[in-house]
Image (tube, rainbow, N blue to C red; front, side, top):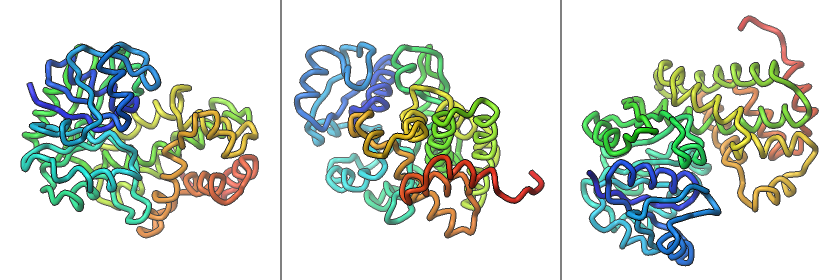
Length: 331
């Protein structure tokens, strides 16, 4: 049993708070809004983000210092582009040997850092204290206790195993992996490819196209990951192809759904309105992933096409023509 703080009460943070509580841990869930924390404590639900009822043992608070007091395991469940700002506020409350776990999937825009690098820079924590959780994990299905697997990536095998035990339930199976780079690159890039899959579905293209996008998307992810030092086996597993398939094919995927709205002719503003103002992570990530790839001279044509649609005014129809018109070459 561990004392865990989950910093962020969105769908993914709430789902993992439930997993931790179901596994028998002491869990405090930090919510940015006091009224949300009060609602969770009173009703044991967070219905705007997760329909499933929550264990009564979960304690919610909007006070970060209170949430972090005594926590030996801290799960960071805020969006990737706000992680640095939040950590700056929280770092004084972190335990000197606490395990810091990234749940965000993205590359920081200004620095092109992975989330574990941001955590290390802001907190001064040794690399071995930093972990990431990633995989084919749709929060709503986990909330409903449908069987799922995940990857706990950490260079310190002891901490990885401790996290694995803390997260193990009858419906949630964690696997450990020492390849933090591969896990983070797979998680950051898959959202961009899911946007491409959604766009293709939106213009009426079928399963052949989806399979091609997923397969070629994986090739892009592997090229970038290997250039950064990732292991190919990581990207061929749950943290790579597993997460990619789930995010690209599920209507519950915010990135796929966002892309589909764009493919049906919607504007960025209309797609935002349809998601309650929540930007799909891939819309931002396509900028930082493309910049990171460029710095390593890695070609990512799908990512570039998504970037041009989201930020350069290219239509989805033009993007499809652009991709299909690429020079033929060996696979």
